[in-house]
Image 1 (cartoon, rainbow, N blue to C red):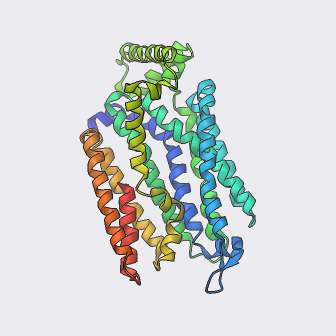
Image 2: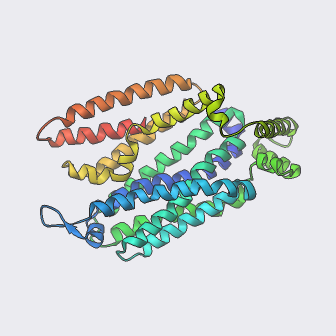
Image 3: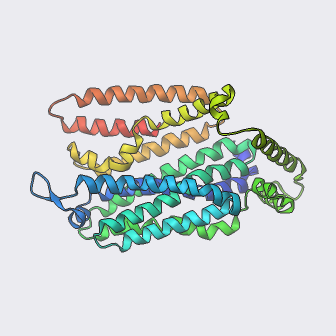
Length: 378
């Protein structure tokens, strides 16, 4: 494995740069749920009071600011298609980075205005949506077949790593008794797309995009850049022919296919059901709830150290995803999906059983949170 990684080290490096979008995605998911549990953030944005008489965030504020980013992600995913078509994969990366930087600046500069927080969240979502659709596409088109599986899995690995970083930062700043406690995590979000903007000039455009645009010489240069670690004796002819065939096959399919064939053609319908089913199974573990409300949920059930619990469970998630990357080409996909699905089902049973305890002891509350986070790491 390590020999293969050395052989394709430049390809893996370029793919890693493209996964900076996953860094932005993972960091935003975790840092914002942490902000909602910080007392300075609550004092500045809260407009109601809880049963103890303390200033509290309204349910409207919590739900709207946490969920509005998904509207931005949907729009970002939709606009990424024309940008990909006319400006290439790197064009999307530039646009997405600028959207996230703008969103981070709006949030960090805001002075307790719900509307600006919402605007910032939408802008961040626009960037995340573009990254989510294009980063994996870029990796699939750029990575050599020998490392394509692990390279694609690095998107999830980078997302998990940034979630760990985000939970670590909020855990470190939540004790600051000023607006710096939440302004620092907000501002740091801009650092990730800024780093990507610095590195983008050094990565090649997708050779398949070049071929689709009839730019054969540029495609050759991109291919040679991807295989630079193989030395001057590398011959691009075979790889170029493979990509040519893929592009021609894609064009032939485009000429004879339609959106309706996804439902009318039995083979295409089966592919659609399998692929969508896998994605549904990935999300059915309730992962989005913990991304959006993890810290405040832990606080609501009596966890005394919700930020620390979040940090620990994100460490577990990084370990789980790293194992998946290492074993990506060694474990059959269906077997992996089956085993992890059974493990998630067992986690649900445990959580449901513990949740029936009335009143809920602190140890049981910790168990619910820990098992929930473990299930989402699967």
